[in-house]
Image (cartoon, rainbow, N blue to C red):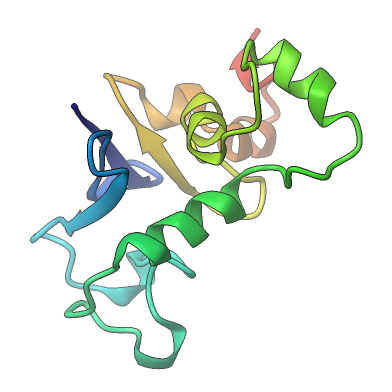
Length: 137
């Protein structure tokens, strides 16, 4: 089975992250409309050669995912996993659950018809909107 998520920068579609369950591999396809390297997320793209021509490999995508979630040795990780209804630590499952969002930047994973202004935690906080676990109240 192939899982596809749109990598977003605010409300701009940067590309598609795909996960192939059978092969246990990730791939990334950059949106052809992206012409500026400012939309390329760090770690997913090579810092030494930041280029639109670079093709992120499985390892790049894994590193990006792991950077978007809590580390497995974090205090109270079992409690957090319980709240998320996850039976064990799995960086990809956690990343999907939190949409890959961070308070440090504007990249996120879109899976359905989510709207940036209604779901991105950093935007909501900067806009002064009250949230409960990133959901507007």
